[in-house]
Length: 255
Ligand SMILES: [Zn+2]
Ligand SMILES: [Zn+2]
Image (cartoon, rainbow, N blue to C red; front, side):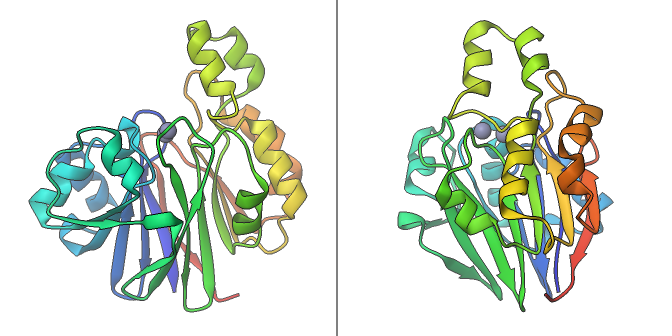
């Protein structure tokens, strides 16, 4: 059974666990080793249990803890060539390049990387499939392209970014250049963009919808909930991920 959990979600650090059978993957790590170990222990696992780390892109909230953790535990790291070359990541014990966003498998989990528009060199988000069920992780993108919609539109569970409320972003503390970046086509999805995506693809199939990467400065859970109300009402389980706690394990039943 495919299951997933989060170490934390937001601009101060991200990390998502995806597990099936006895195998567990960590997608991104924006925390120190100690903090990662502590947050994983909360979810009943240790970095020593991981089969691999997958990286979506080079921003610090996703990457800063990857190399130290990979070195300490001897873990293979999967990432695109663009992400590998975007900055000095530090020495990695084993690198698997995701070339041309080609699908690959880690143990019995099939992984489809999906290119997304974001202000990173070669960002990828992921769809996971195992034993007949699927999970989409979709954060850090400024626009929902037809390509994104085609890949994430029929998942059984979805972690979806609702980063900001446009009004709060406009009136918030960020300098104008950062406001343009966050709200732009290569920035982050607003509550309304997330809701629009869900309306277009439909939510009937979704067992879990996790609203994620919610800005602590430019959004509130209440605003996100309000914007996503119509879509979320059709989903069996809708929760909101937070920066400190992430979210606890969720299990996906076979479709
Ligand atoms: Zn991010
Ligand atoms: Zn990012």
